[in-house]
Image (cartoon, rainbow, N blue to C red; front, side, top):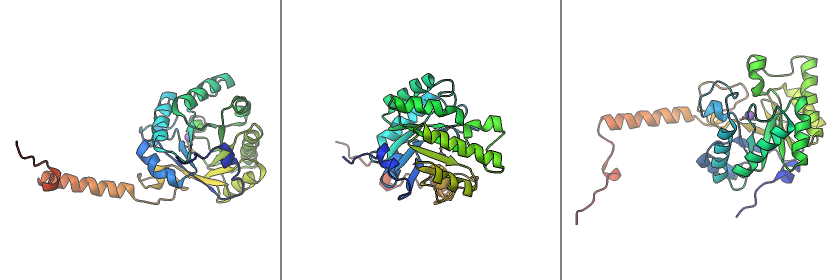
Length: 268
Ligand code: KIV
Ligand code: NA
């Protein structure tokens, strides 16, 4: 069996070959992504892109564990990281540890990720000291969408730039092995990458980050609308629509099933 990418391998990529990361939520997709990716993130974006929720707030720990288990069945080489959902880690370091331990134990994933305002640094330290590898997530933090009235890129004021830099510095000092930087001004993402020891993984950030991540159904073109930072590498929406239309036409015209799709069994 192939050796799985681990925390030291990711750390060692600071300033080196960019880390290739994508989200995954199910086993067959994980199997397709695994040979090409360093990290597969079971993101709480699953709530929006798979379950049709308006934001990530209603996502539960049980949902994350179920999808984490599925992704682990499909991935053998990439590191698998599971998001801690809203409400599963903010109350106390102890709460975070109990829930992170459940994720690692029940899924077999290598690490957890949590959205990390400066206030969460003590929790990161608490987890790391107890053997839980933590990926941090700074800048635009989707779990703050209710408080902030939506998803807004960061870096519009000196104040906001300083806040994002402080989030990254705090997570770095607390022992996070990598830091996702989401939705920040390009120059701020570049500056931030230069001041932390942990590799940064950008999304709507900068090509000078130590790696990149996208939401897989976004980059495969499954949706009409995507944020500015998404590059579409396929047209999954168009392909799916064409295929379903062709199937519907075939069924209505009795062209499907054809001779190749039926069992012709000679009776004994
Ligand atoms: O939930 C998610 O998919 C994420 C990535 C976009 C970083 O947190
Ligand atoms: Na997330």
